[in-house]
Length: 116
Image 1 (cartoon, rainbow, N blue to C red):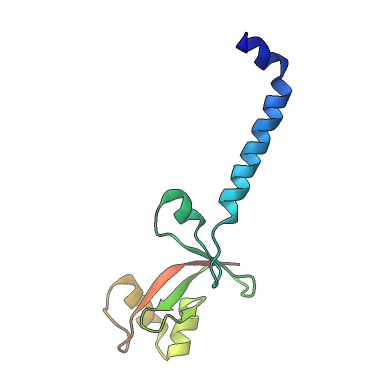
Image 2: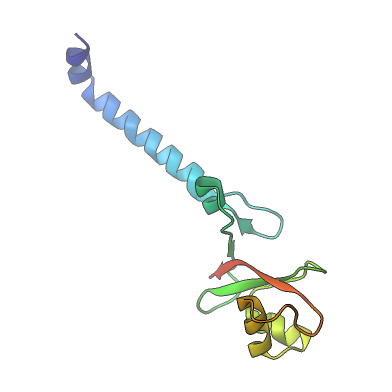
């Protein structure tokens, strides 16, 4: 009896399934946007600390978004952070890899990738 019902209304169930899949896909892919544009879609799905920051005003390949832990200033690339704070790029890179504790007395961290 159930099998006959499903066979009779197969198209309705098929279309309904597609609508549900599309709705779930939209909900997951829209992400959680905060005031600085950080999308935590990956964190929402996989319960991890991965963060992706979208930026359309910066051409080029993806780059690490850097944050000064003390002042909470953010830059869309390691290079921009190094230049803005008067550091050599190699010093900041070494610090972010864990080779040094601080760069000229400042502490930074990588937030995630800026994607154009």
